[in-house]
Length: 191
Image 1 (tube, rainbow, N blue to C red):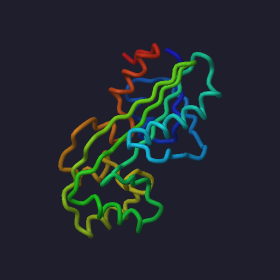
Image 2 (cartoon, helix red, strand yellow):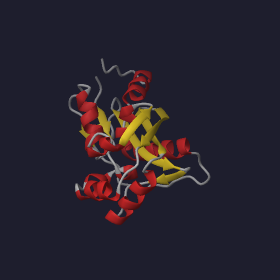
Image 3 (spheres, rainbow, N blue to C red):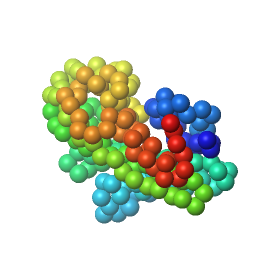
Image 4 (cartoon, rainbow, N blue to C red):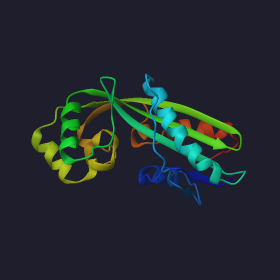
């Protein structure tokens, strides 16, 4: 199997790939400034961000390497909720998500040689009503501070989720089924 390079510092994405049995995964996070296209759809935004990361790292790859990049964004009422920049910002996001449905989109870009594939995965997440005490207690765990939408579904925020429609792993930040299909298209079988 060719060497896989993950253009991300996300421990969750790394765990998901190693959980699939990927050995010798290279972590090479993209560091460039992200540019969001104007008037773009949610799908176009996440695909553009993933492509930017992949194309930053691709020139550092060997000819047979595969670069994988992803970008996850939470959308509520059509507006993107990024990572919170403060506890107050996290509190505001969680209050807005309380009792509501929101979308989680992840753009995935796979680059191998001249092949560049970019696709988006979309899931719906339904939060129950949250109390201010629950929000404050969750923020005190520091768990929401490095996550889009100020929560991680695989952690303590799982207590907030009534149900989802779509790929659970997409909500964690890397839609594995979609990624597996994309890798097949560039000649990489994970099984």
